[in-house]
Length: 151
Length: 100
Image 1 (cartoon, rainbow over the protein chains, first blue to last red):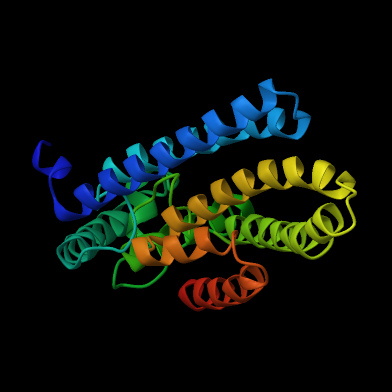
Image 2 (cartoon, rainbow over the protein chains, first blue to last red):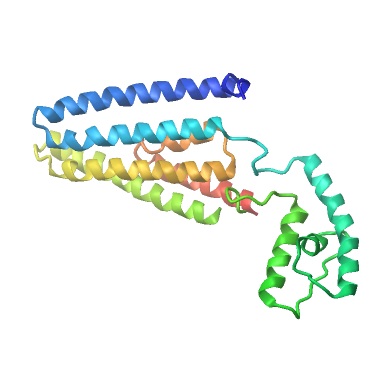
């Protein structure tokens, strides 16, 4: 945690943020003093610069707390684990389909991504089948399902 | 992702056109012709729109996992006239290539 604040990328972020916020604070001060001496246009700018500085601080904070394991490109070891899980779940899925029960559980959804090939019950519900296909596609591509990286 | 790209593209065009109006029409009118009307209206609006543009660009950057240099390019595009259109083309081509 501590080292993530001192990495070269983090230091670059700190410096950029401090430089930008200091500049914007100066511009706010300048516009505010112009506004107080009767310049109505500066009155608006005196509020816009702090707003922009706020966005900069938010970006700085957000980028500092960005973790590579939160979505994004799949790491190779994760993809490997996912595919073996898929294979194991595929046999489970086959067993479950002979039982003919509960195909919309997680086990069945991951089973579709197994090397055996897609195994859908399209007769059940078109929308559910489409969603299962989508889940299988996601699992096959090894990408994580997070709200931040929906593609 | 494609929705984020669309939001970014809309804001890139709006901010690009806004900056052109400000620099090519507003500033000459204010300082050469002495009529500050265009700057007084377009100036503050452009300021707010630029902040919105920045937020949409940052949203797209997070989803696409851009480098800091790529982000700086997009931020700078809001300050240089005409550059917003060029950068918008580059970004769209790159994001669409990654989506495929």
